[in-house]
Image (cartoon, rainbow, N blue to C red; front, side):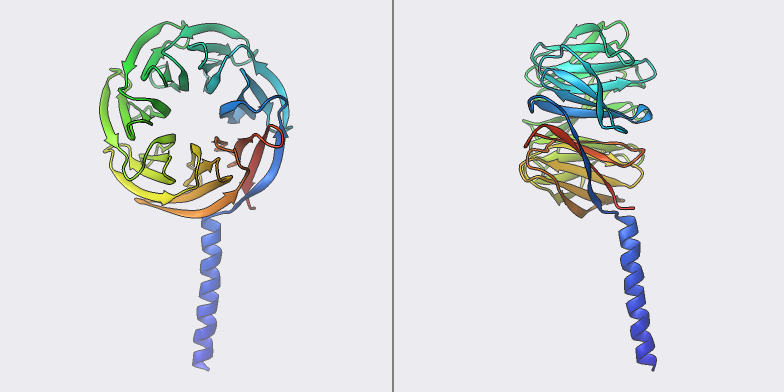
Length: 325
């Protein structure tokens, strides 16, 4: 009798443990796709959660999608070789990095009309708005530099020599730092936002040639998507590598959801997205989500927890995935 009770208790405990684990680590699934007409030429995409708009770099322009209806509501035109989009909602402005013309566009967020263009270094790739300093950074791939300019006047403030090819970057206003991957050096560079000086070069081994980057601002963690099929979690205060997990091939973007403490890696060559859970200094893969081959970049809506991944075949579209209820 006692053995049966113990066995039943063990079974119930196991079941409850499984339920708790599922609740802590929700599984993602396909929800819908948003068709976008035209050729499959794209790079980054950015969400504007408050107004439910998705900005998708696409074939020399940026298409703006209402994610509630799945329809294109406008476009930012004349952005040759566009890579990234940064938003400054309080200023009512957006910024694009136009790789083919070595310029950044300053755009009216309401009308989507270009106000001005700013000359940058060669092949501006990632672009970010550092709200704490009210400055825009373009990270110039061939120029191996960062161009810093005023978001209102467009005046170039300085050019920062990075010593390597930059890929993606993020900013931490409270820490007064920006962080950028140097893909050809397998390093992360830390930049002081006030002085515009490079203050650290951090090796990312065992990671190599990181492209994607995301940040957990509260816990000071960087998540790097590396070419050798690893996601590296780095302490953004010390540069110490804390953990690594395996991912698929062809990563080009990462995302982090502060609401769920999940980190994401979009693996374009394998058509998967790796989802890992951050707990303290540990990082654990909780799901390998099947997507589409070629879906190599991504963004996340922190309000809805939906993730968006552009996919090239059979026609260009944005795939939307969400958590199980």
